[in-house]
Length: 72
Image 1 (cartoon, rainbow, N blue to C red):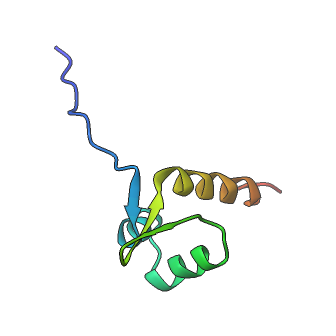
Image 2 (cartoon, rainbow, N blue to C red):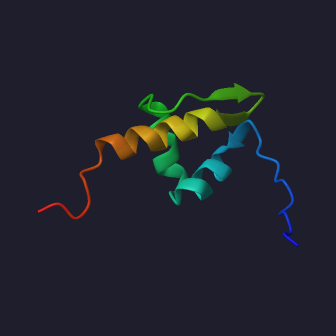
């Protein structure tokens, strides 16, 4: 019998710490990306949040601009 993995909750908004963890980058680089406008973010109180869709768009844009691997 096939066992299904439990569904995991994916938040719509990521903290800067979560954003950093997913990209394996530091906070300074994350804030540079935000300041450059490469990723939209919002401020709720004193907490900076990044929409998950922005993370996905950022990764997709980086993949498009990356050189093809293994080309000769």
